Image (tube, rainbow, N blue to C red; front, side, top):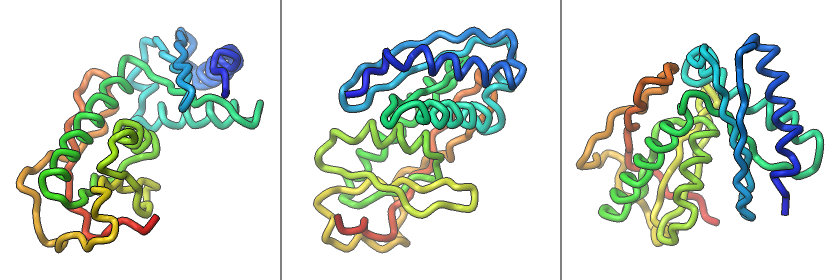
Length: 205
């Protein structure tokens, strides 16, 4: 088991150097550790007067910073805890919205007995939904092929339909959900994404 506490100091040092390189000289970093044996994580919160710039358009800067932190930390050992970087509560709000959307999709899957496809999501957002639904036994989640931006659609499917043909793709869901807005400003809400019925059955295990 990886002890995230042992990696907290080196991870924070890497993050602070990256922030300095990006000219966030007023940044203050605080860290908390999730010692879960299944998925140990380190959460970093960055306090800065320029949190909007740190988040970036569609959270691109924050995502890139987090990616670099995890990549550089992984060079120090074979197995390292996953690091999450947040500022101004952006990740928290985004996660809450994604989990809420996933639960709404779960109810649609259970009610219809059909798989449902979410809009294209980046790796961070897909990870959140996979984790939110991983302990629910009657559904499975999997990702489809990437789009031109490197995002993938995540599909939530009933386990019992693995060997069945999913209903015709022309059928529309009863409820409509607004597309997810990936706003760069930390004070804006993140609306719910569209949910669409999957047109193809999930691949055989």
